[in-house]
Length: 69
Ligand SMILES: [Zn+2]
Image (cartoon, rainbow, N blue to C red; front, side, top):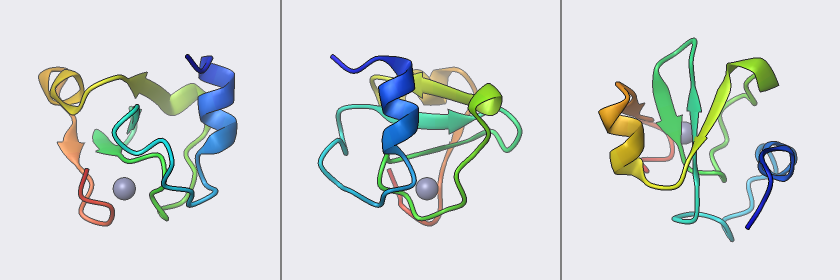
């Protein structure tokens, strides 16, 4: 398992290897993404990690239109 710090370091690299393993959600935009999303990297304090997209949706986040998680 990855720590939250490792997840945060990983995002923004546009690497698809963790797609489906975790999702990144941004508190300020209420959108969740795949780790490989090419959208601008959010600030650490605004980022939440979820293991499933269902969890992100349950918490009120919408799927990103760029990476379509
Ligand atoms: Zn995205």
